[in-house]
Image 1 (cartoon, rainbow, N blue to C red):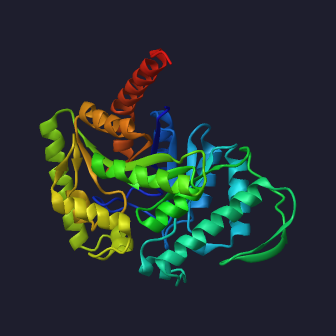
Image 2: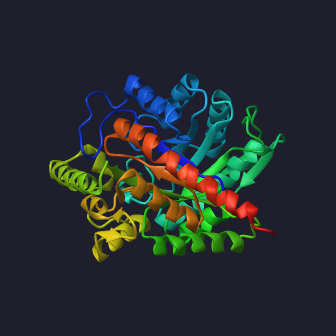
Image 3: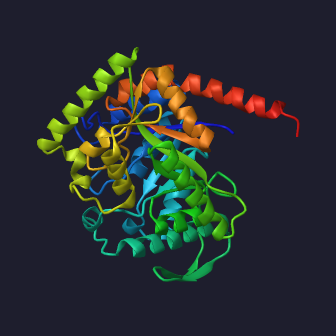
Length: 369
């Protein structure tokens, strides 16, 4: 089973541990970070979405015209545009990127953040809307005939696009969430299902839930699984743990000072199931399995991708392989010093994981059927 690595397409050098040094969109830094991913073995970068952030589609197009092989994962919230418009945007971007686009659909787990752009639906209603939205986008990408749509959330007549993706039959669709409603929607529609880093046992349970939802939707294929972590690596275990605790203290200090990057996750009682799960794991203990560390999640109220893998490159690589052995084929990682951590992870961790995956695959092929 091939393994892929997903990084972050940041638009400035700010993080939970350091204020940004310039504007929210710094083109020079954006390109430098993306190029570091391309040059150090990463497959794809995520251009994330926030209510007040630079438009990720425009940033992704900018990067796509500058780099040749790095693939793009574009985050999109269905509440911000009509699906007919979005489908054309995605198809045009896939043309610009020459077939390197995947779209990550965000349902939205925080009512306040959704409300900043006028979204007043309940959480379950948002999942229903996202599912319908994805179905429409897929149809627009793959049909050359005009069609009508009269659904629960969208109604239009006689639409046909005149721009189509390079990828056939269409780009992949990515989706995330940890509630039953999320499993149902993503299990039915996603090519890639995204999870945050939990202990191995809980991750296995979530994978089973996603696959069960896919089968219940009548799918013969199953979504590929992606899991996200914050790697904290150093040459020795002792130095890695010292680095981890320094990182944690800075996060706490910046949160107390009102770190703008945590604005979307302002509450200590998050509404979304994924963050609730991370906090529940953190309440059970700090360390799990080979290298999973939870205090960074607790310090950010379970804000998104926030659990860490701590250790030497060898330890972190082996921890990632533990998830690969569960069936995770896309490993997402984002350091706190985004540029330098991207380079270090690409130099020291990615090659080890790829080498071990190749050995596993070769061993499977060598076993007689």
